[in-house]
Image (cartoon, rainbow, N blue to C red):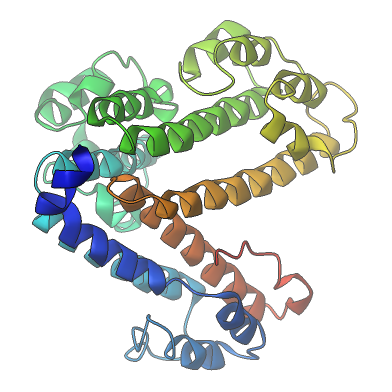
Length: 348
């Protein structure tokens, strides 16, 4: 039934996103970029893609940070076009996409202020999709209570920060993904089917990352467990095992219950020591790569179904991966590290 009326309000924007998706770089275009000798050649090759002449006015030598910033600017413009033309419930769905960026910006400004970093530099590093009107006032708040009462109480982030007591609590907020998950449930199938798969995987990734990053720190196992999202394919049994894990081997065992995650550890040797040796660092890096590849796969699958909002979220994630790929290739060219230039994650 939803398919009968989907196009009335959202058909045009779905077509726009599918058009954007057609502009995502292909294997052949990546191959051409990887053969560039200089960043000037890199810019010339990019001009033949949908990016066009977005670097034409940048003086030489071009920095890799400039390439990333300009590519992100194009993505933000596309998102804002979609958001400005959306009606409910798609408008609310797109707002949820921005909440994660807003939380990241809040954490960046608070931690930067606590370490006495320059305010203008901090604001310049904030993600443009997470900018809100009262954000600069974050830099003058002296504690989290003042921060909430004077700045965040009037923003969409207020429910997520209400119970935070310190900057540490802010750093590992996972409430917004659960809220987004529940909102997608109200939208019904097929949007809920697509988004539940993607968000469940994202929740599991956060749970595993929190576990590995807590090894060798002062974070207790009880505190670690409180940071885990209460959704995902690992929840609840896998989460309980990860909360008690002391090393990578125990993380591996906790993930054995999900067949897709089992393969993540196949290429990793058994870790040694108590969870903070070099093997663990290598394993964490390997897992991050496998997580990114799985994320790309899930987001590509979202485009196989019509009449659902998941493609808006998936397009944003695929473009973010593309920007990471461009930055990696440009960095390898700039540092003459051609032996590692192929270590990116192709999309299509």
